[in-house]
Image 1 (cartoon, one colour):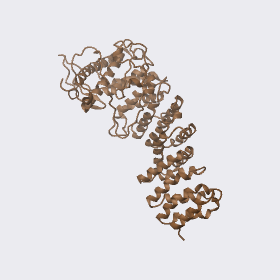
Image 2: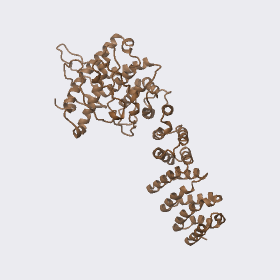
Image 3: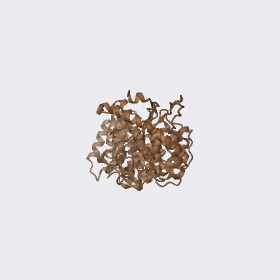
Image 4: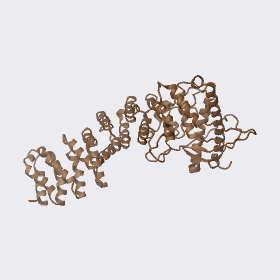
Length: 535
């Protein structure tokens, strides 16, 4: 005989009126309420509310009660499902917490937005009851559940854990999260890897030098740095890029990037021109060079420093052309003038400058005289082109502020000025005798640091003067903590254009002619006339 509304209310009243000592004697009344899940929509909605209310009074019927509530969570009527899900946290006591968390995690696969939000709220609610037990249910499904459940459970953890207070996310709980995450990372997709690294990178227990080093070790394992790079395999290239992006914000003066920098020098740079991009819109060569430049300040002692510096030097020569040949009357030959690929050169020159600090005599002792002479000719040609661009860019931007600098054309000019100024400062250092590696620059795509957020301001290239000497230097590594977290882009990649304060640079040598070769920035070719306007 089916249970009616009247049956449910009558037995509810019987249980509600029973004393705490005597309520356990009314198992039959509670069974009637459990049987309500087999009734019609009204009976089911009442059962969804009544079952959890008396759940704790009948521990011997716990399995039956949870199963009954679970039946309601899977009902065809979405309103009944939502009501049953809303009440599920009331079952999360003692040994039942793991099972409830497991059930809620499976329910994340729903496509109903309101129901999905209800599941999320219920999971957060039981976190506050027993975080460790809740995590057990979530990680159980991540490791063994269906793909859709695994995906949504990982996204839940990545987004919600950072919002929980410290009294919930204790050290013991965070240690458990890290241990379980390492298990999951043994077999993950690229998207899962990014989400899981975001999850563990936010754990308070890992906000120490030792903690960041452990995170770097995790990334190293995923990056397969012990294997040679297959430049023709886009998945292999993408894995390396993703891992490097995740490692970048972890590097500091105490947590070194040496293994990544070494791998880039030994395996990536030699194959730079043959790398297969995982994304059609991505300039893979520029992306790789930018990552290498960002890592280079945090490189520690390197076993093969000289060969790696030599590889950087060789690659730098490829992007720094010789001046065009001149015919007898002093005019340029009919051959097209070389393209000055400033974005690439900024990255390579910065990386060479950073590693060069570790072997300052490289250009003097390790490069033969003819090669050094060739290098200086290339530097001088590049420097002359720089002065033309810098001067014309300043004229084009002079007097422009606020909204005027926000137009697409002026944004390009601002970044172009940053790039050319950076290269100019670094070239000046290399022209010292002996070469100097003392100047500091901020890479053009990195945000300008606010004064109040960092230690005393580092001297700029202009403040240092042509000699490169200055008072006590502020190491770029000491500013590590003020660096903004590197957010890896997904899909289409782009560089951030930051604000820039314009200063005056001394001219490097005399400018004897205005070059008409195209300007390259972030892989985009822009003619000088378009970039600077009619001068």
